Image (cartoon, rainbow, N blue to C red; front, side, top):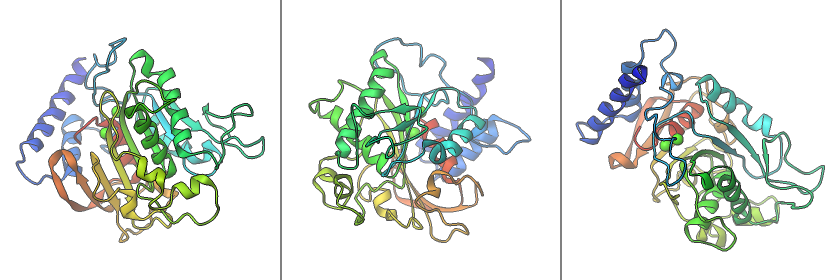
Length: 332
Ligand SMILES: [Ca+2]
Ligand SMILES: [Ca+2]
């Protein structure tokens, strides 16, 4: 406890300074300052140096709405995008980094495709479809969201426990579907969810030109689809949900504006710029962790009423961004 007291004070001091609007404070720098204050380490002051939890009490509530707080001990769901594949190759990098940064809770990779033994997700920790209950590209994104919602409910929310989510590409729409279904009390959805943070990486929030097939999910991801029209922007769970939307100008599949859900609300938005020495592509946005603090990016922070956004050339790598996004329950 004693060890955590100083970091706690540091975090709040920085947060309240920023909230007072002393300056149009660059939030990447705020985190640097708070990190520096927390830790004199020979290691690179980083996500790894954040304390495990600033509120030791927040997970003690057995029932009722869990408190929000900055921590590394929430269970984390990793939700992939369109097309079935290997959860290991998709998520092992991020999973490894979260462990390096001392995330202590369960980290679940979520598989949801099962057409047959050949066409299915593999090596996932959680499987939401099987031979008896298949799920293919021809099932609505809403149905994928419904299954994810039930899994989170049955594993955690029904016992008053909250989770964080990192979603890639269509996985972000799956999470909007899950939270929209619960918030609107749609038929077949669980009664409540507690999702503290969601970060989406390269998600087509406003669609993309999905031309390759006539599968339902592909059609649902086209701009103007009925599905996209039915999903809430920034949908909230019963303990509130802090959304961070991350996109890249070098994403060859999803436009940078669709990826940050342009002109729609979210807690935080981060756009990697085309001027970077290495491209953040549609797939590398969920694996890139090099060149930390060397990225050119533009960011917006709803909590600081910073609608115009700011640019930095010392931005976090995409995976560091994901770590910060699920660590901080609200302000960074
Ligand atoms: Ca957050
Ligand atoms: Ca969290």
